[in-house]
Length: 222
Image 1 (tube, rainbow, N blue to C red):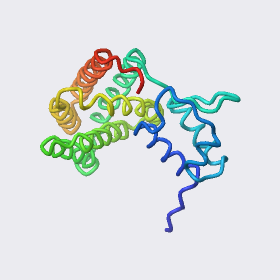
Image 2 (image 1 turned 45 degrees about the vertical axis):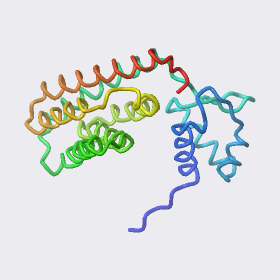
Image 3 (image 1 turned 180 degrees about the vertical axis):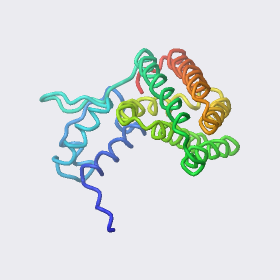
């Protein structure tokens, strides 16, 4: 079967997300749709569609007659987001353990952890971050709840923005790797309570670290 070509709106979405995370579109900055369309060398229609999707993900705000404002995140915002993600991802871990997934079904989750270990050994924090994203995305997928997945997808972008700017300011995330492997083992062994509680403790610890770094360094511009 021939793969469908990616639409211009999705291309614009991917590029604008990349520009936000890279800081090319800094938080708090304002932009006109025509300006963004020119930067992407696209017409305004697909760019407008992409901006609407990004607004739904909480990355920007469309202001009538004023264009686009890239939204900042405060430490309080991040604490609230982590509280929601903690509960939803912990539920996913519990449900994944109850599902009795096969080893092959858990292969992507285990591969993400292996890649995180390799990244730490190589001192490659960008690779670690990418593998960490894959772990959490696959965990929610294994939980099997589509509504949980939709909410987590929307909020995960905010966590990714915060982590991008705080990762170099926090301790090396070796504990995170250990936590992920414990969650994986609990899911593999069908220990639902262990999977849920271990993941909840992991997310609570991550919240303390990231919010603490944001507050310490007064980082409200991500």
